[in-house]
Image (cartoon, rainbow, N blue to C red):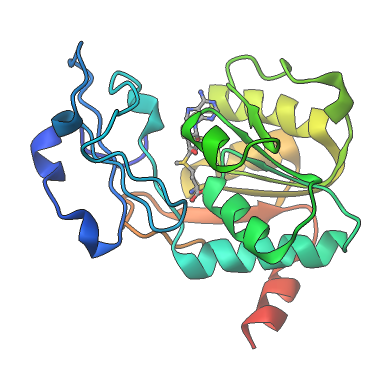
Length: 228
Ligand SMILES: C[S@@+](CC[C@H](N)C(=O)[O-])C[C@H]1O[C@@H](n2cnc3c(N)ncnc32)[C@H](O)[C@@H]1O
């Protein structure tokens, strides 16, 4: 299974939190997490667990690859513009977009579906625990609830995308934006029937894989107009 480019070497994480970036690394062999084996620092989400109680470092799937500020802002703006003031947006496994949404909109109808429970503290009320391995284990009130879903699956595998497809199709019958590795392009078209966008999401840390954005509407036009 192809995975995001990330390091499991905890010795690489000794960087100062003051740099204003975030870095997260997990030592999968660590049975007893300590602050020294985990750094989580985020200027976007305001989480910083350095020298405090870390979440379990066995959860190596929580390795995060955050969009840069421009990408998360452009995606959030485009989503809000598409759905209008009364619209409902679900960010699935895309917390930095959700974080921007919350800065731009006071609506309580935008939700974050996320596996990383640290975001529950940050967004109480609008956080929904989500594990793609149980793709339909979601409150029935969210069936076809959303006007737009933005998703970024944690793994570059067809199995993961299939499960995300079930979730996305449960949450909406309207607009979809999906960001994932370019190697998933064929599967995205087959499973979700999305078109490839020109817009290329950028990350704070350089990824080893080419990354793309897919949608079932012309998101490029909206993003371009917001860039001008
Ligand atoms: C690579 S990150 C995408 C983050 C996105 N680029 C952003 O900046 O918001 C993948 C996301 O999937 C989440 N994730 C990890 N394991 C998951 C699981 N089992 N089910 C659903 N989401 C999961 C991670 O917590 C993370 O938010």
